[in-house]
Length: 243
Image 1 (cartoon, rainbow, N blue to C red):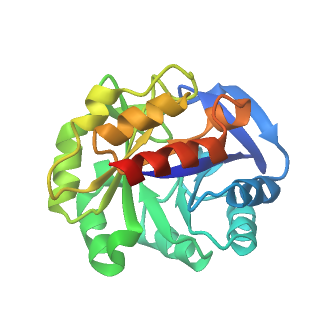
Image 2 (image 1 turned 135 degrees about the horizontal axis):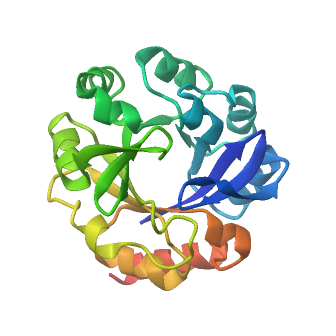
């Protein structure tokens, strides 16, 4: 299972929200590039970056910072936040990111997702962010009528290779992941499922791995020290070696 540190960008700084609430923001650093280099130095094999301002505005806003992060790293970067049409997706790839994450666009315009998958293949990831199993959009500010499981099935039919599932009610809470709803998305031959939200201990990561989860995005727990990235990577790698 791949462990993916998260950097959420707001006003050019590294922040974390609680349950997607922009009014509950904690700043963890004023230098996102330095933070990105830190996670790479500690062994991360991929970085998860979210443009929170872009998610709220409906189009990317932190492009200069994102470009600087990509330039400073040798590991791949995946980007989400405000990517809702073909033009913004193309711009994201021009910044040098390896993969883009579509959330609102997946709900609103499945045909766009199909076209982008046809063009970019596995570089297109879909983010499914849900409250009580119902998908949220617009930077988590609005609810859709879609159930997470139904949207995941639809995206699988379109050829999406990776899905990031975030339980919004757990995100930033350091409680525990929503194992049931996350594991329910794992299907034989289906998209790789990446877990996000509520991860606070190495034991949480190990349990997700047992459910067949392909990756886990870790945010708040890294910044608070609840999880040491080097120790977590060792634990997961040792578990894989003994399996």
